[in-house]
Image 1 (cartoon, rainbow, N blue to C red):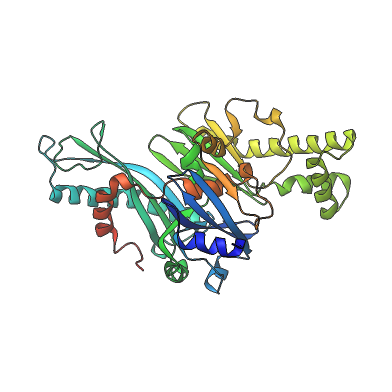
Image 2: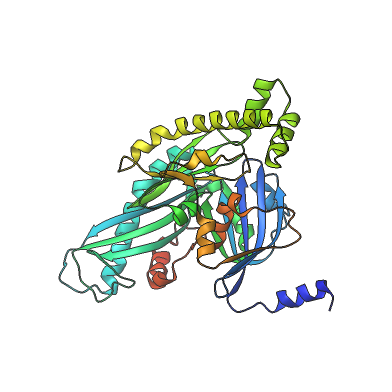
Length: 387
């Protein structure tokens, strides 16, 4: 049987547990679309194809989004804000068992408190009017009565109802695009790029620093909250610009030098020169993010760095136990999850694509709270755009 025909047969009869997923990532240089098969039963993710578009708007102009079981739009921090936070609501009758009427009321109060807490902050962060923001999606990620975690509070009692929401705001102007994309998938998820990796690797006193070619975005993870905290103009291209300025060379030559470094084809003198500039540039990044660390509850938060673009990484940068390369790919290997790559994809390095892997594999929905999320959707349906 020819390979092309075999691919058609495999696609027509998916294996048990297999989902077809598409991830759209808004990056500095444009948009990257990745199609993949995800199988949580047999523990593998297979990357099938990748392509690039100039921007999100191109998705609505025949951008060629494949049909999928799940479509994840990971918009930049300019176009999306994902907040994960806890809300505590006191019960009027802590000794009584919760019935569906009270549960509905508790969810409604908690939802409003969550939205009121974040909406103004989101508007300021995104430079938008509050009326121009819409809730793209919201999920319940955790529920507790007192100190006890419960999946369904009906019939239980307790003094304090604690609920953890995960929601994403987007500008209203993106709604027409999302309406078009709904037709391409069974499930559409919108998140802020970098937020899924933060949820996947960060503990309760951590920062996640996502470095792209032209900018750096920082997220904080605390015991009761995970949110964006800052964005800076430093990116991996800063190293090339440093070489250009100090050696009086153009961008093409600077990029060539860096490629030769990665291939270990530079002379000892030039290798040391590149490493010196790399260290100097990395110190600039550390200096930029240092003020953010004061927001942590403890004096020595752990900082997880993720570099989206390959660059000379010196092991000495990460000898410090409180700063290291994000380890989501290592988590996958420990869990026995394979990452397979189609021959159609010319180059793929997992350690530099951990945001993509997190978007494919980190949960966007919480099946253990399916009943509660059904109630939540009923309460929030007038806030969330429908198909």
